[in-house]
Length: 217
Image (cartoon, rainbow, N blue to C red; front, side, top):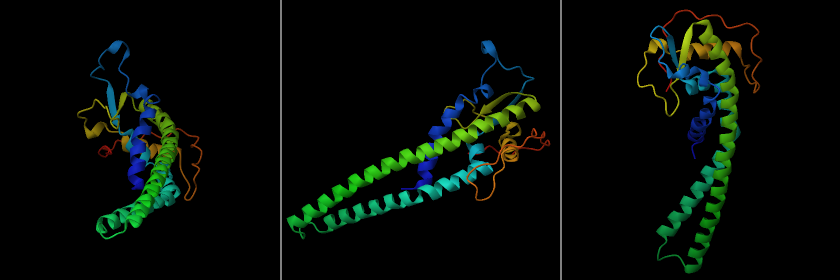
């Protein structure tokens, strides 16, 4: 069981819940009219931005540490089951019927235990990851809202959604790195602290006109 893979898969599902909070950034003008050519449009990889903030990295490390023992237990059970299966296969025609029945029953018992542990792990890890994504996502939408208004953006589209309609976008309109920097300024975290600091009282300053990095994948 790969803990990082589980957390990534739950993150993909949980981040979809942020869609309603950030819908303002993806909505077309009223009446379905096309966005005027002069309108300023930007894109953001919301999921990547959340994971690359200082708070997001800290939360990810904490979740890794929190769930590591349970992940190790699952790996241990999986190893025991595999070893039993190998003993049964290599012992065909050599083991007594009594020993075969004992090993089979032991394998079934371990398999049931593994299934329970794995289901509980995925449910708890998913809930923990969802809480982090929603907590950071709500605040990030506020940061993005201020940034868009201060910099004259009419629309900011999220490229991280599974059903994102964007097929191509210039790197020059990607605001992901700008939002990460502004978020870290507004919501700084302290080393070793599981509780993020309160947001700064001042409004983040308008960033310098630099070429943003490529979108996060």
